[in-house]
Length: 384
Image 1: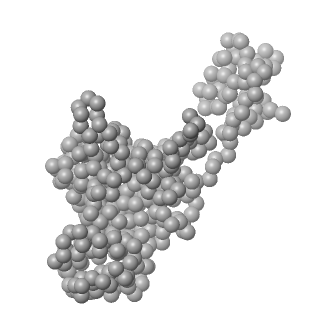
Image 2 (image 1 turned 30 degrees about the vertical axis):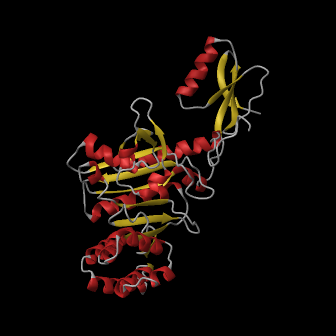
Image 3 (image 1 turned 180 degrees about the horizontal axis):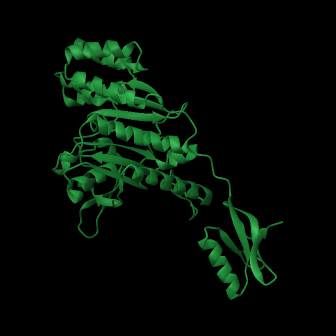
């Protein structure tokens, strides 16, 4: 095997793409900061126990594991930064009020999430801790929309759900937890046949009503589902009210759909969840929602909601920037030439030194000007 060959689903990022990723990262973190979110940088490695606490089996299966040569304990390479953010909020910051955190960092997955996906995604996200109300859910969704609408010239579609609705239905069933997880998976897959085989008639009809509540907020399926479930499970009334409130807050900014059958991360989330899509896109650009139970695994329960996205996926939808305007500076062994180059760079110009007799190749720069000496002065002029 050639020494330069990389593992499957792992790739180098070449200059033009690397620049686009970095510029997107800077834009995103600046937007997060403008909303009061503080940047954190958790470690790439942690002891496995804390890295997968409260996140379910799916993430554990995605986590690379290794043995720490110092302690002998099992460590993991993070496959998701959200649990790390929850740990930082719960134990390192230890604040009692609202805390807003943001992050951007590499992950490593044991297997790719999609057939063509990378095993080294770059996770960008924001988390809001310490407030249980729907105002926090709305802020997080609006933050995701602010970022996506800033970098994409395309209409967006927001799919809203509330895990508490399905949890209320499945919690009323007498079957074991394994059956509940299988039923939740059938909802995600829109597997009507699997749901139809449920022997508890009331639960089956409840879940089929949930499956039918997919579409616009004024569609026929949602009122029918709401009326049935509020009658059988009164605790769902608040969930439906919160969904309508969040939908109203973003009306006009994106197309809003309800998909109560979207039980993505059913065992992790416990409230409003959302996914943001570009028209025609099969995969969500961003996913988020409420996960109040996660921080309790760290010994300090904190209300929590947030979202994340893969910066690599977002980058593919953003047009590549045109080559940047640059100044070519043929090399000179002169102090005044060095001073001229330094002054131009200090003023924000891109100045690339051209060595004598060398070929210079770049993808990112367009040399439309050059540094030349005219009448004893170094000046910038248009390049022929």
